[in-house]
Image 1 (cartoon, rainbow, N blue to C red):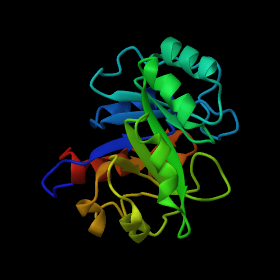
Image 2: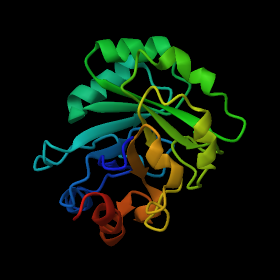
Image 3: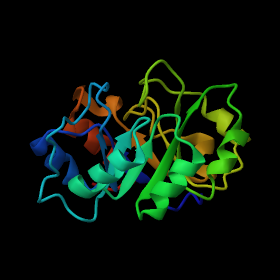
Image 4: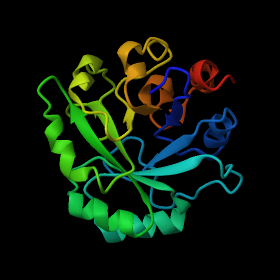
Length: 212
């Protein structure tokens, strides 16, 4: 990307209504909501999107190996703009979901041995990729991977950068600024506890990228 272009900000792992609205007041482009029951940030079965959440903020639902039927039901009932797929979802499932009218973000877990050729079959069936640190857990391991590995990526599809991002490291992206990065995805690095964001830490990030 051009260094003068604005990098979008996504705050993921939201679930508390008041916390959602406080974070939303800082103007992130995306908020993420986790619908994977094994996650400590799972929104729960009766989650409802705050009515007063600005429509300008895109709502992202995070799923892990869920059926297309379940994903589309949640997309409709909760009001999601994008789905973020953290499991072993196939290109065919991504195509099915995209054809249903929802934006698709496919996640890849990255380490120094990752083969970026594996992203190829997904290029025509997603809006974005998300590159996260490979680790023990689905949906985040709170660790930064070696961003230099991304030089092996062909940069064809814009991507979200994830994995251990915090106010301490988002101001020194280095070579990332010359890549096709669309957004920074922050979760545990701006938290008080799982699912509850530290508004001051979020603001420390948005002050850099969104001038808030």
